[in-house]
Image 1: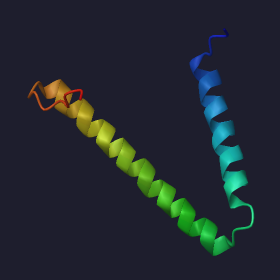
Image 2: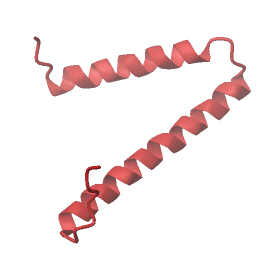
Image 3: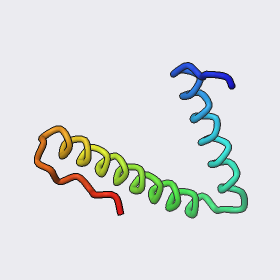
Image 4: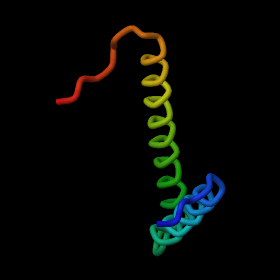
Length: 69
């Protein structure tokens, strides 16, 4: 198994995102691509916000961590 350096991992993520964008854009109008791009921006922002809130909550030691079901 090959261990990826941080730079290799980032490059692979960028290439995967580019391939994904090219694939899902096939057959879409410019307007549809614009709406889809805005949607993914919102999804990304929400994921970042949830991760920041989780890190902030766990670092404050207030015990608001989710319990495993």
